[in-house]
Image 1 (tube, rainbow, N blue to C red):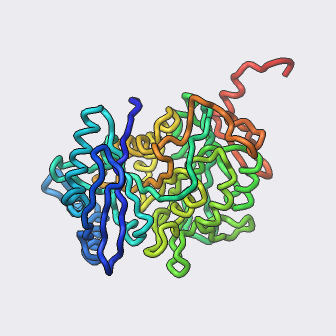
Image 2: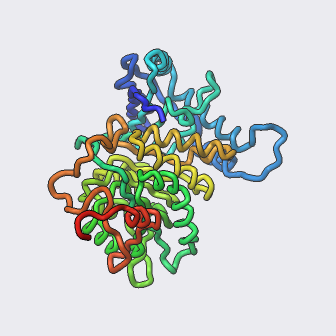
Image 3: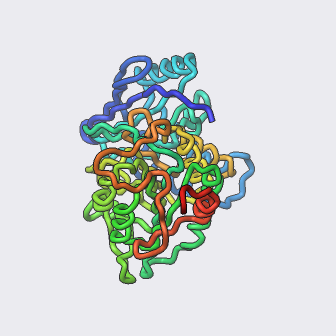
Length: 413
């Protein structure tokens, strides 16, 4: 896969509903610009478009489905409202400049000051001039960029990247196909795992206590959660429903989960495959599960803004992890994953993942450096922690164990 260079096109949103919104280009290959941003849809109109995008199975006389037409209509409206006047001219000039250089243009949406705009489906931005969805091209990735003062640097890592998977199924909740989810994840990661790029461990004890033990004893680069999620409108916070270790459930906010993950210095990426993982508050940009994890110091979080089908989830996981393990940035990886999902034939499911990113250039792992994450990290190796079933509740997959067993032993072992 070609290593890509991106230039940032930073769009800073300001204002509010009462005074109106302004969007400023605060950094781009073509300089700066300012324009008014007028949301192109009322809330009822937006709800109607979303409803049309969820309809499946309707007879079509055209190659383009009703779902895709609704997505295109929504994307056109967002694009024309965003890239207007001087901002539009700056965008076109920036595209010309990066194309001349053979580079990409990373669209960074800086929405911290306007949380009520975060839930708009920005991933559907559609350029009517080129008749293309921006996020479907690896050359124009769309990133939700949350401004925080602490700098983010890539961590040195030696393949295989260590992935910790938590699949939560509290008995009191509607049943998930837990073993099916695990099998699908294994299927999605079979190729990068066979190449020695990824090593996967499953956390059998899907509770905060089980997570604490796993993070205490081993180092991981990626945390992958599968389970039920919701959004607490009373407390304006995203909620993940974990097991409590006693047959019940425990509601864990993104803020609380971040408190457990923040000390794992090797951790650079969290994937939330749960409903409402990307939903946030209209008053606080850091209120959702994904946003709270960013606030806790996780450089990159991928969350779903709507339910995702099994084939799309497999395609997303396989392409995304493979690109990350080959040293590509998260923005390139999510672009490749979207294209793979689009190739499955679904009209708009490729727009389901949302990428929140703090890494300035999308690079979260330095695969060349291969160093440990620094002082305070545990002594366990980054490359292949010795995971086994036991009180800690970890299970390493068979391919990883088989590769270990096939290796020649050193010394008198």
